[in-house]
Amino acid sequence: MISLINPPSDFLIDPKSVYPLGLLTVATAFQEVGQEVEFIDLADSTDPVGEAEAARGNIIGLTAVTAQYKWLKIFADKGIFNGKYTVVGGAHACAESASILDLGYSAVCTGPGEDAIPKLLSMETGVINCSLPGNIRVNRSLVSGYRGPAPLMVARGCPYSCSFCAHPKSWRLRDVSDVVDEINNIIDSHIVFYDDTLTANRKWTIDLCERLKDTEEHVFRCSTRADKVDAELLTRMRRAHFREVAVGIESGDQGILDVLNKQTTVEQNTEARRLSRETGLRFRAFIMLGSPGESHRSIENTRTWLRKNEPDSVAIYIFKPLPGCDIWKHPEKYDISFEKNFEGYYGGRPEEIVSSISTSHLTRDEITAYYREFIKEFS
Image 1 (cartoon, rainbow, N blue to C red):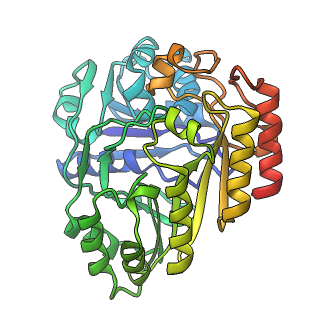
Image 2 (cartoon, rainbow, N blue to C red; image 1 turned 135 degrees about the vertical axis):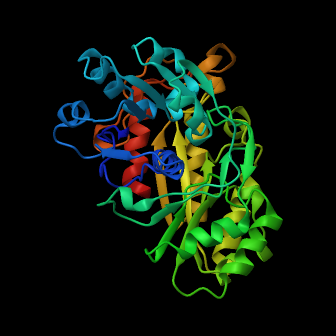
């Protein structure tokens, strides 16, 4: 038996708001080769150690983002998997495999775990590098109780190189037909695409919209980039029952966008907002305060952009370097100061979030104060 464990999501306000989509694809891949799978979802568990210790499989697989690293350490420190083959995947494993092997886990998967099934079944140890699969299958019946829209992904990896992101830079799109087949098998009426940039390939997106425009069972929302939308594309998306696009605006200051290597401009962000309004799509802006080089002036430029453009909703975050991103690996290149540790990756209640970074212009307390101001005005 294979036991797959999703660690607690206690860093979220609602632990059942983000589906463990990656681990579900691995579970499905194991099932497709005839393996019995025990899926242990500890997202909102009141006894995570006890439930993890009760895992029955001879192979134990876990996933973790950096905010869940503490649970990998807790499980290891308590020795609850002693004598069993243990493998860890997920975003943190891809960026910091050594930190996991140092805890005593048998192996680490860097990349989509379904590609490593033969190696996992043979209990290979150490770092297992995985390639990007072409299509994705998800057995959604393995979990229950999740709230919000049903998640779906159309690609693996990312074609961009933002300095604050740790995504693999290789990128592979699924077949449109495969995506549509998955959509047709989703019971939930509301679907959200988890991809950072759904519209990265314009032709592919138009093909998807053509196949969805006559569907009445679902409505969609997605994330994208300001330089990857135009009036025709957004119009097609609206006809295909998309209701919201979310864009990583990040900052209203061009200097900050350049440091982040966004390869977009303030003007493009403004145009994307205008086009969404004209085509009848809600516009959600992701804003990040405390980026390298952040100053009083750049903060005020961001505030001005939000006031002028009035997004339908705004999600505001304080920047914290993710392990694996260029800022984490080469902080000397950037105007930023932070401690390299895996603690404090908290995404919960705004009133409890504080900055862990400073720049030459702003202290941690000043960034935190700005964050509270923005939350009060724009959220």
